[in-house]
Image 1 (tube, one colour):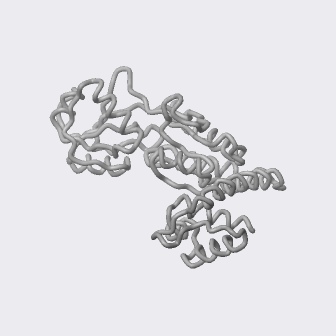
Image 2 (tube, rainbow, N blue to C red):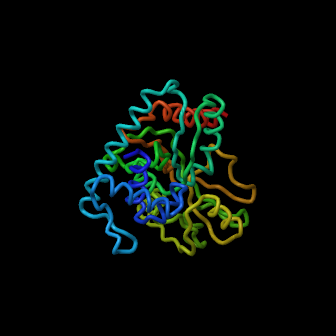
Image 3 (tube, rainbow, N blue to C red):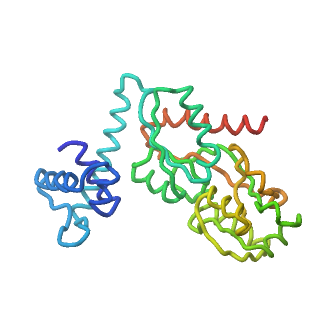
Length: 293
């Protein structure tokens, strides 16, 4: 039994199909199927019921996957501890789209400059999806909208707080945020995004009814729709990015401002904590530079 087969098994279990696992692992579908069949022959257990489509884990298979995760966790920790140069390695990072649109590129440039021996594999997604990938050990850390206290079993390191702002095309008249939201079409962040729930909660608290026409999950797309005069929106201020285009008007949303907290989350037993730490410092440094500018 080799470690690669265990990684393949865990990917197939997490993805729910051999085809998706092959895409995630960069292998052919036949290679995944052959690896899993060979593993079953070696351990004498039927891991998947191949009569269903896609194949489903058997009860024995689910038990074995749980043990395989433990083996992989110990193997990764041992591999890191025996590394000749513990500063080197590949860091698998997840990030919400809004962070990639603002702080993450500058932080990665800083990390690359200060720690050129560290390679980064970046994945984007929604906060809850990235946190689930942390639990499945397919990510080492994730830059997410911070969960409410007690809502997560993961370790969280806050890196910044971004105020929510109203954005509208410069042709939209008026300064009253409430009136603008009530009178203009509203471009909404995907309801599955944690930041969207924060925004919706504040709208409900202030009893502001919006006419939601469109729903989308990236900051760039929201800004693009607003620039095309398709509506107004509430978004986290891109404080560490290049700011909003000149034809976008920005108004504070709330007094005091409503804040979206960004944090780096990781498992308590993450074997690459020593690589996550400089990323956290790079992110905090980027925001500190912006605040001081």
